[in-house]
Length: 72
Image 1 (cartoon, helix red, strand yellow):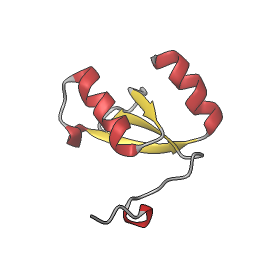
Image 2 (image 1 turned 30 degrees about the horizontal axis):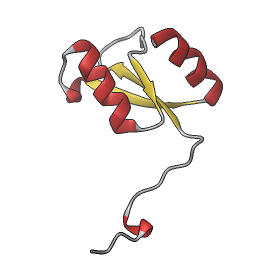
Image 3 (image 1 turned 135 degrees about the vertical axis):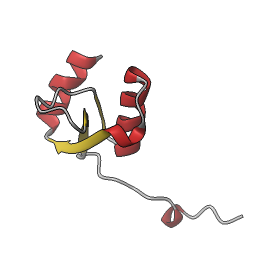
């Protein structure tokens, strides 16, 4: 079995994302994470809505920290 690390995607530890409902004009944050799929999964779990109902935006580390504390 080949388990070379080059086969697995890596991401910078300085990438942060927030998930919003796609049609929300106010852009109320629902979930934050350092991974796009994880941020969407958290939003789906919290709302019970489909993955297609969300949009993702990259945010700064400072905003990520504030939202992480707020959203829990």
